[in-house]
Length: 144
Image 1 (cartoon, rainbow, N blue to C red):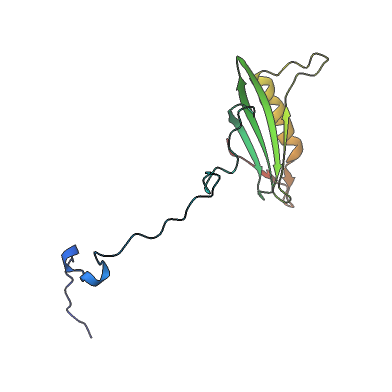
Image 2: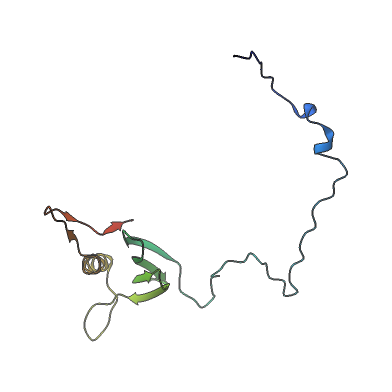
């Protein structure tokens, strides 16, 4: 059994007035705490003396998503420092390590040396798996 029903487009004038009464007041706005801080503040606000802004050069994450390594470049003044940040999910923990050249002076690495060190650490943290059929499979994702 078929019905021959035609559909008509409705306009705002076709909507009954009971759905949108004119005398409805706005919802009460929750007052902010006496401290004047917003309840929706950033979870980790930038500190005046905190770390400099950084940008990610490379990110490698385990396929399971439980661990991650990041190579960051932080600029402080004219100097650029390269930092490896390793993080785990359970329990959540991060570890920051500034990359320096080996030796007594501890001078910062340049970008090429930092990338090579990052690749070495990714290879040691996420060694490839060999399957039963002899194929080698990576156990990490290169996100950047």
